[in-house]
Image (tube, rainbow, N blue to C red; front, side, top):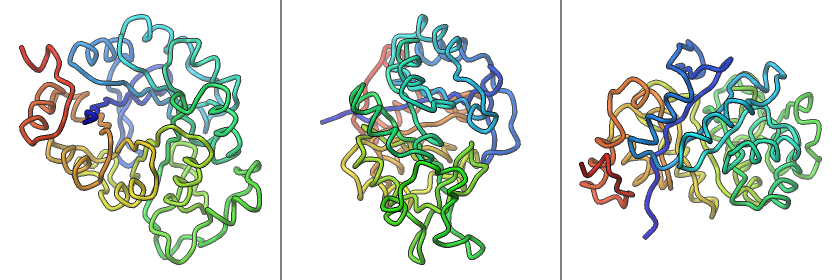
Length: 286
């Protein structure tokens, strides 16, 4: 049986790790290299680094940070934010990342997913999806082509919001609504060659009240590639729920790890006791 993965997320803004609530109210959480070393020793299965303002600020990717971290930790590292083309993905992988996460650029030009997957292999390509529940005020079916300039008419028709849509895709770190259905986009990303999906609920992000299980389950049941659950962890039970009810393959969290509320060894012990297959670590068994 495949083990479930526990993944701390390090949101990077101007070279520092930060954490917000529903993508706003950002506060400092520490130095990325220091936190990466700490989580490596704690028994994290992977790390995710997301430069949350690179796309919205039209800023370059954080190559120097990735190089520094990759030289000091020995677990898989996924990096996203500001990756706009295949050359950017190559630079990130050469800097020491094991996987590249595409979000805004993938929505803006879906062929990038296929091109990057073709060059580097699907195992290296993660498509990140920031999703928010559809409200009566949302413009159903109106895709933001000012951002999605590379989105063809055929694909647009497949993934546009409609009256049955439950969640809308946002880009630019949650700042820009796209008029795209999150579940349909997940299916299309998998079809294009993504090897994994990182799904964040903007509604539950930072709230520490639990993941959006309906969102996770809707996407996980519609694709055959692994899904990483993100947004809402407040206690070990929430991680269990995402894995068991949300059918996620991995759980990503930030606040509960950054501020020491529920350390990784404690979370792994809890999940093990709940019957979840988890990679045991020295930190867990000491």
